[in-house]
Image (cartoon, rainbow, N blue to C red; front, side):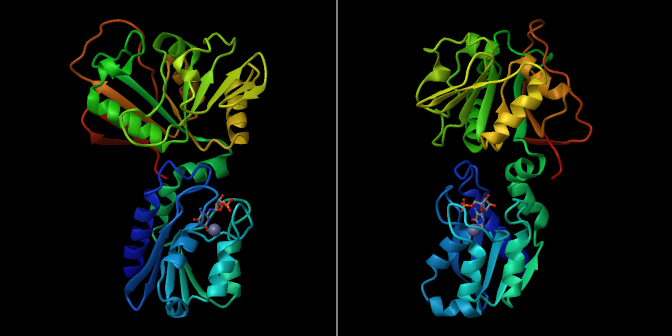
Length: 340
Ligand code: AOF
Ligand code: ZN
């Protein structure tokens, strides 16, 4: 039971960095000595210290570490990436015990970190709050296991099931739903729109209404119809443009040539190659329907204004969600989640 309490603390610590660690996972770590937390840390940003290292560094009296237990929500890494292996740091430090939330399915780790620690004679327990630790990194695990980003569909519809005529979600939503959408954007790696939405709405796709990071913007624009002075091309965030004309890269803008045949498959492959771990698909209806028809989505978030009747316009996408759990965290927002 106490293991669960400390693991919950690891998860809460990890969430402090939600949106900032891409392409790395969210990881938290706690060090406990004689029933007292003597150190804590989380992974803040790719390229910077891993959670365990921050936790070790935070301990004032390092002499206690040999008698301490280290909790970490993800298996300590076994490889030299941008930073050296945490499993080495743990064995060199010589903890008494290591408690792991879930194994790391990254091909370079995948049980190796746990093995290295066990081989050094340190007791290892794994699988504590495993479901919660997997859920914490649903984006990272989907990316590594399915070799594609975690896909979230998002749209706003009227009470009678229409998208706003010109796709402007703000007319259906209100200031609170707008803030929610900006929060969502700051947490995910990227946000995707099709040509029609970019042309009619001219969205900047940033997180103006909250303090958070801007997602990578993804535009599908086969014939490069969206003019360069449109907001999606401003310098507030990087933009990937999937098109049928050319490959090029200049400052914040990367054009990626893609074939129309098997479009979705190609797109997901290119997103994988570009290390994009999660994508919010914000529309329009044609783009959303492509993901729905191919059954390539992991969550759907629908902002529904029951009081608004539009009577005509573009029908909201139709989709099957029998295998998903319906969640209602907020008024007017329905979410469909997969059990992870
Ligand atoms: C850990 N603790 O806090 C994190 C881990 O390029 P690097 O060196 O940052 O390594 C990135 C990989 O390390 C990442 O893909 C994942 O497998 C693991 N992340 N591991 O022990 C951490 N963030
Ligand atoms: Zn590590």
